[in-house]
Image (cartoon, rainbow, N blue to C red; front, side, top):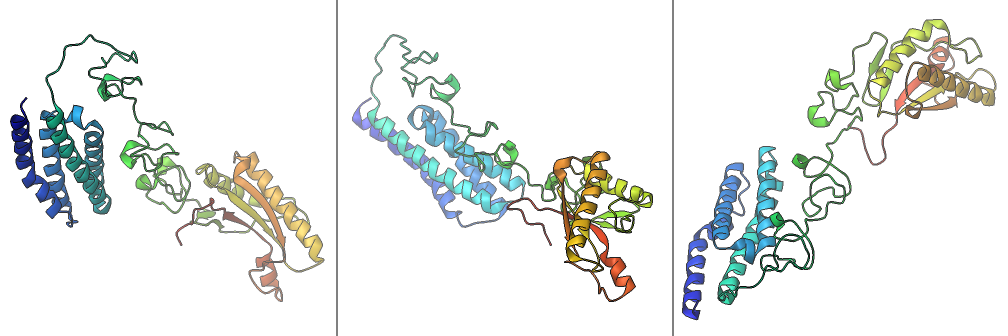
Amino acid sequence: MSGRARGSAAARIARAWAGPIALCAALSGCATGSALRERARAIDQELSEARKQNAVRCAPRELAAAESNLRFASLELDQGDSSRASEHIAIAGSNAQSVVAQIKECLKLRVTPVTVGLKDTDGDGVPDLDDLCPDVPGPPSNLGCPLAVDTDGDGVADDIDHCPAVPGPRENFGCPWPDRDGDGVPDKDDLCPDEPGPPENQGCPRIQTLVIVRRDRIELRQQVHFAPTKSRILKDSYELLRQVAGAMMDAPAVKIRVEGHTDNVGNRASNLKLSQRRAEAVKKFLVGQGVLPRQLVAVGYGSKRPLASNRTRTGKAANRRVEFRMIEKKGVKRKR
């Protein structure tokens, strides 16, 4: 191709793409879904035209990056996240401009091809003539270059994976779905995202007669009863603890601190030991009902944390209690 012909071809591409690219730039400040979708369509049209002009050979990485960001922008718009979609569309627009520039350079450097043998240095099945990475094997679908690194093996390449070290679905950009209450039901599917419950109940706790599952504790409608000054659980508390066990087995990812408390009657050190033994007795009972041992921690507080005044009989009765507090995961704060 002569220098004049090459210059003419480059000029035609520049004129053909000048209008849509200017349109993309003009819309860069728009944040509405319709404006963003229109902008994405304009970029997509330019990429289609670029493919016809051999963009796969001239600018493969820029083309792939632009198309990937457009796909993610479409997902984000479907999820109503215009802010993130705008960022991906801006990146796609920048990559599209790079594609245009690369094609212009290709046209300037294009020469009449010389017929050569089908040499394949890296043995990947893509002849060196068509292989963008002739010394490193890669699939034909990626023009002979190796695929992008995927550290967590979730099928989303690290360059577009928002959580490259933790596997997650493609539709959530490689990140696991959040699960605030730790019940194994993702927040997006959980009708009660702050109270743990089983999947078959759509993440909500089952309604029980003696316990209520709160976002930070399992609340009891009656106290756990023990033999006086002993850690032996009385039979009238068995059904109460069975319901606690049921709530915990519905949410196996949740961890509970079983707290033992006493009134201030007697020696403080003795009360502390008694409260610890009672907490451990409750833990043992729950494990016997099927609760995973790793879900439970037993702690005795003695008389350190009274709920009411120890000056009255009623207050002392209220202070002799067992509580079930959810232990928060590291770095996770429950919604208050």
